[in-house]
Image (tube, rainbow, N blue to C red):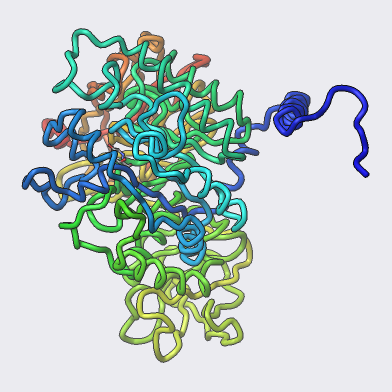
Amino acid sequence: MTKRQSGPARTGRGVALLLCLAASAAAQSKPAPTQDQRMEWFRHDKFGMFIHWGPYSAFAGEYKGQKVPVGTEAEWIMQRFNIPVADYRETARGMKPVKFDAEAWVALAKATGMKYLVLTAKHHDGFAMYRSTVSKYNLLDWAKFDRDPVQELSAACQKAGIRFGVYYSHREDWDHPDGFGNNWDYDRTKKNFERYLDEKSKPQLRELLSRYGPIHLVWFDRGMDTPQHTQQFIDIVHELQPNCLINGRVGDYGADLMGDYQNMNDNGMPNGGLQEDWETPQTMNTTWGYSKFDQQWKTPGEVIHRMVEIVGKGGNYLLNIGPMADGTIPSPSVATLKAVGAWMQINGESIYGTVASPLTAQPWGRSTVKGNKVFLHVFSWPADGILRVQGLTNTVKAAYPLAAPSQKLALSREGGVPLVKLPAEPLDQNDTVIALELDGAPRAEPLIVVQGSDVGFDLDYLAAVTSGKAVKRFNRSGKFHIAKWTGPADSATWQLLVSQAGEYEVRIRYSARAESNGAGFVVNIGGQTVRGTVSGTGEGYEYKTIDLGRVRLPKTGPLTVKLQPAADTGHNLIFFQALELSPAGHRMVE
Ligand code: FHN
C-alpha cells in the first residue's frame, strides 16, 4: 500500500528544488571559507590533469591541406587559418566521441598520481562540451551526441576521489559575434563585448557551477579587460560554489592578481623563490589540443624531473593531455603517464604536501621538503656513490631510499657539507629518492651574491631575503618582482661579497602605480643610507631604472644591503625588480 503524503504532492522536480533550497540555505548559514581554507587541497595535491578537448581535436592540426606547424598550438587552428564560423561549425557537428570513457580517463589520472582534473568546458572556439541551454552550440544539441562529458567526468571524479574543475574561456570566443578574438568573420568595431559577457559567458559559467555538483576549480584563460568585469566572474563563482578555487588568469595580465593563485605562462618555469601559490600548465608534446603531426612527446623521465623541479620550487603541475575527437587518448601519452604513475606509487610521499625547498639545484638533482624531512631526488648518480648535499646546515639523523626505507644509508660530513653513501645502483633510472630525517625544518646557508670581475651586482628577487609583508611574486606578463610592502617593517635584504672597493652607482628597477607617487624608500648599504622617492610608471607593469646616486664601498669582503619603505603607505609601494650596484661609469646590462 502506498502511503499518501499530506500537503502538496512532491514531484521529483519539487523534491530536487527543496533539496536545492535546503542546500543553499545551509550554504548561506555557513561562514564563507577563507582563502587559506579553500587553498588547502591545492597546496597538498600538487599534480593535476589538464584536458584540452573540443572540435579542434577533430581538425587534428589540419584544415584543407594546411597544417598547424608542430611547436604551435593545434587548438588555435580556427584563428590560425581564419576558418569561417560556418565551416568550423560543420566540423563541430561531426564530433562524435564514441570512444569517450570518463571513468577510464579519471582512472588514468588517478593511476598517474594526479589529484585534480580540469576539462575545457568551452575553449576559445566557443563550443560547449556539455549540454548548455544558453547556447545550442554544444556537443549535445549541435553535434547530437547524447552524452554530457562534463556530467560524466564530474561523476567519475567524485567516485574516484579526484577533484573536478572546468576550464572556461570567459573573454575569448571566436563563435559569438561579440566575443573577443574573431575579427575575420565579425567586424571588430561593431562588437558589443558586454553583450557577449551577459548573453553567453556569465550564463554559461552559472550553468557549469550549478548543474554538476562540486566544482573545485574554475580555470579561466587569457585574462579579462577590466577589474570590474573580472570581479563579476569571481562573484559568480563565490556565489554559487564558495569553496571553488579561481586560477590567476581570471583577470587582466597587466594588473594585480585577483584569482586565488598565480599561473605561470604556458610551460613556464620560474627560477625559484616565489612566495605565493602558483601552478604551471604544461604540455606532454608541444600542443594542448590534439595534433596528428606532433609526436614530440616528453619521456617519463622528463615529466618526473619537471614535476620535482616545480614542486621543489613550491608550485603545482597541471599536465595536459589532448584526446582525439573520438575520445581516444594518444597512446604515447598514456604510456608516459603510466610510467610516471609507477614512480609516484613509490615516491608520491616526496611530492604531495611538500613545500618549496630552501636548497638550490644540485649537480645530481633537486630536492623537496616536508616537515623535518628533505627528499633528495637523484637524477644523475654520482660516479663515486657519494651524495653531497650542498648548502644544508641541519644535523642529519637518518637517510634511506624512499623505495627501501629499511635500508639505512651511512652519513658523514666533509667541510660542513652532509654526505650520504648511496646504494650501489640507482633504485630508479629517472629519479631515486633519498629521504633525509633532520633535526628540524630544513635550513640552508644564506645565499651570498658574489661580484663578477668588474661588473658589480644585480640584486634581484631571487637572492633577496624578504621580511614582513614583502613577497616575491610573478606578474603574468612574464616578470618576477617583490611586492606587497607597505611600511618600514617590510624589507628585502641581500648578503654580498665585494671583491672591488671603490665608487659605485646605485640604481633601482621597479614598476609603480600612481598611488605611490612621492612615497619614499630607503636603501641601506653597509650602514650608508641612500634615499629615493617613487614616481609612478603606469598602470601595467612598466619597469623603469632610476638612478639613486653614488656610494663608496670602502673595502672588500661581506656587505649587507637592505631595502625598505621609508614610511607606512597603506598600499604596495613598488613592484621591485632589482637594485644595481655598478662600479662608477659602468652600466649593468638589462
Ligand atoms: O590560448 C590558450 C591555449 O590554447 C591553451 O588553452 C593554454 C593553456 O594554458 N592557455 C592559452 C594560452 O595561454
